[in-house]
Image (cartoon, rainbow, N blue to C red; front, side, top):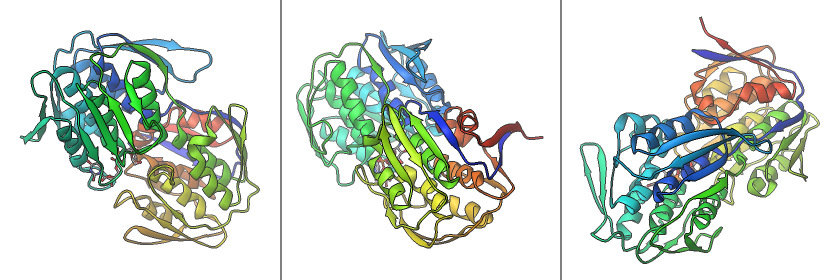
Length: 427
Ligand code: UD1
């Protein structure tokens, strides 16, 4: 298995390109199931999760054609064509590897009147149920049955009627599934306390480009007037705000100065606010965000929350940064239980962190040392890379498949701004 070898201490400087957003792409691709016409997505990142999702689409009879790059995009152009859906089952071995596979449930049900999707099973960042996905679809008139580890969903004859659903907890994935299903329902649907992450806005914008009628885009109250059919579209995937935030932390921990090309400051306001409190200058520039740190980092208190709050997907990377800040910081993770798996590994590098339930107390330390480390999820792995960039000596980050799920050409991008990082095959 490959690993990343990082020699800490280089100050990052220069410009690095931000890719298309993984989490947006994973909800835009299943929209291809909503129409028999081609859906072309631009700026799709090259990631293991995207390849996995495309493989799943292939199982349903969707043709996937990769059409290279456009000069103004970092990512690829891919066309999905679901002229005929030949199979409505998402099998266990694909869903198990990629939780986002559950996002085919809503569109498949709306288009075909039925869908069978394996239950995703356990997940490293806590017990992640899908009850809200199912409750929302039931509120739209679906019949749902759980049997043999699968969710079987059926629409009444003539299609889903549509309906109203108020989310008791904000859920990004359940909001996405509900939106895709409601777009093709017979009547009008209303979602209350819906997630309003920028990736949800990206999904709404694509659905509208395909002919959907949605009111309240960007708010937590969405009204969807179902339409008889949706048509094809060409759409550019939004920039990845979590990737951009991760590289901002990487630059900051080295006292560096980088421009995140293509990043949208408005989508990452909570992260930029946190970074400013830590003493990092963040400035919106033409087509990107400029980050400048002077080597002095200040402690701060952070709590994750649904958008527009601080993204849980930024918690691990900001924690790595705070390990090197002057003073004591308190972090609270409100979205997922068990999302502190990076703490023991950061501790092995010299960090001083105490956790209790959802709270982590980070006592800043003057220096950290390189170590052999590994993490069990994507953002946790990135926090180890960030810590390694400013640690004394060499850090080896193992289990790279987590990073390959979500960071496109990670080592190439970091090399561009002067990091000493390389991928090597382990003996
Ligand atoms: C998405 C993102 C993930 C991010 C998360 C929160 C994708 C592919 N993944 O995950 O990177 O960390 O949003 O911003 O976009 N919940 C339930 N029942 C449900 C669904 C969720 O109780 O049916 C709970 C979860 O356990 C969690 C909270 O709701 O505590 C939020 O989860 P959710 O927003 O659904 O996360 P995902 O869509 O899985």
